[in-house]
Image (tube, rainbow, N blue to C red; front, side):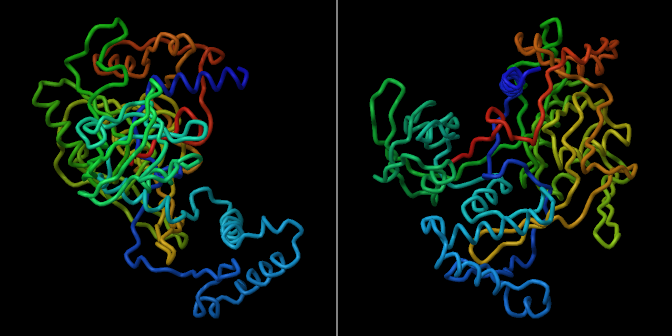
Amino acid sequence: MSSTARNAVIGLSAALIAVLLVASGFLVRVVTESDSDGGSSARTTEDGGALLEEETRQSDGDFDGDLLAEIARVLEQDFVDETRVDPELLRDGAIQGIFEALNDPHSTYIDPQTYSLSRDDFEGAFQGIGATVSKQENYVVIVQPIPDTPAARAGLRAGDIILAVDGENAENWSVEQAVLEIRGPSGSSVDITVRHNDGTEETLTIVRDNIPVSSVTTTPPTGQLTDEAGEPAEEFGYVRILQFSRNTPQELEDAIRAAVEAGAQGLIIDVRSNPGGLLQETVEIADMFLDEGVIVTQVDRDGNERTASAREGQITDLPIVIIQDEFSASGSELFAAALQEHDRARVVGTRSFGKGTVNHAVELSNGGAVYVSIARWLTPDGNQIEGRGITPDVPVALTLEDIDAQRDVSIFRALNILRGEPLPEPPPATETAEATGTPGATETATATPTP
């Protein structure tokens, strides 16, 4: 398949199974443990050199932060293109080089703006106006105002171009900059000048509020749960977990109980494009469906193991099918593996991404953070997920014909399993539409931050 055709397929596939995420500026969620100290081990010099604190530098003679500062001074004095010798640019380049040397895609530096957005994501709420946005050419554009939020009530519309915020020209703003300018304390106001699709311009005064961010939805991508024949499948419940945040366990419990009370005979739990989230909440959710046994084992660099095990008591004993795809990563893989290897659920879809690393977030003095890989995690059967992913029990790959017809074949196969029906033969490999890359790495699959 040509690269053009492949990109088109990925875009159509993303449209078919699109899900609204709240982005944090970086595109792959990590399973994280919070840093209890929240301390900083770095400071920034005026000339752009990033130096370790004195006590840290003395304990590790192999790293000479002063050398970085010395190099920065030489470049500032002698480099032919002085416009490139910006202290902040050099500092960020040095930081990036440190992490590139680790050869670990999960350990990274997060700048202050991005980190301030990411922290809100995990808490399940933020203070702002409530509208998803994206970048189009030179401006940030409203993708969709969230229903029953200040943005919607004030009259923001999908497709509105943000021209200015509080009188400041917003041309060439990044998405992150726009979100940071628009967000603010609940009860405060912000003036947003927009150009509507009809060409008219308007300045709206919007009073910010506390905006809850749901991480669970019961609405399938196509709007209704239907089988391959197009008939409603009302006898089954459908739940999609968008990410694992503070509120996800309660949101999921409410959705599952509602499905059980409605008489559901089985459940579909959809974790497609779920990039992970908080470790403790992920384990808690897996425990909802298990009575006993190991959920996950963490192994640190010294070989020490920490095991999380299920406690007695399930939220339901209904049969479960989990749907995943190649963009299901981290916490969603932990969850799928725990239920799959305890024979509590069947897994349908494609092989998942393969992110089996626990990351530790350490806040820095500049408001940014360092995400450091501190452990690998193993499935209940001791299988490593890093670089391997979760293999589905029933492989399903979209064909070009499925995408053209907007047929959600993974849901069809999940319903076949719940009904005990025979599964059709998989299509030849040449007909499958494969999407490759990092979760959220294509333009059509990127999440849209919410101001």
